[in-house]
Length: 254
Image (cartoon, rainbow, N blue to C red; front, side, top):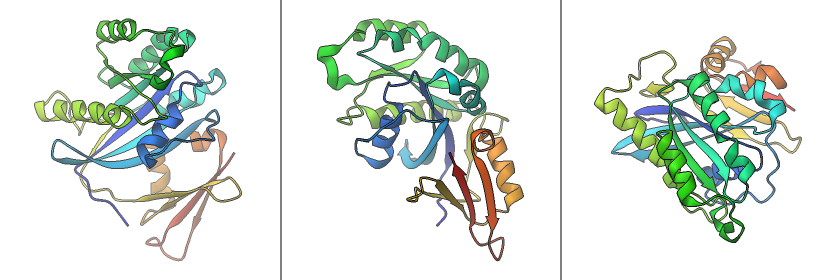
């Protein structure tokens, strides 16, 4: 079933490996902690429709791998992102020290106007803290970032992180600072022309059912949304069923 919304925002979740990016996404989408979380291979995807300032907004969220060997793949996703969660681990000085590089990539490859919120994750491990709240707050202020500390385990501030970023984007649209019609804005206006439904079959492959979309148009959508991951590290199989109005099945085998 297709969803109706006022805006769609493309979001990124970026930061070093092991900071809990996938767990933050899972907590936001599923409202529970992801117990068996491994390092992300390439990119993972999730979406959720939220109410922001009286508007219905669909957040299309791309969770990128933090390991250096995947950087060439994940950087292709930065293009056309409207917002990002820049994540570090409050118990790891190393992940905090890497923030400048991640921030530079986001503003260079996505847009200088991308809205970014800095998230100090693993707030529940305060006893093992290596980065103080004040230090990170100063970094955020110096780099014109919003900032809060989160816990993917308890859910503290997770939803607020995504909503705060979305609220800022919406405010910039309403003030005229951001133009949803501008190419690469990461913002889509109005009702979608397709709906995505994902499952994780027992085989380990991920399937996405795309309604009322031809394979050619699907590829165009993947291209414009920055979805180069499927072309880079997956075997992409498009299996059109009896009619264009029927679902098209896309499987990515890692």
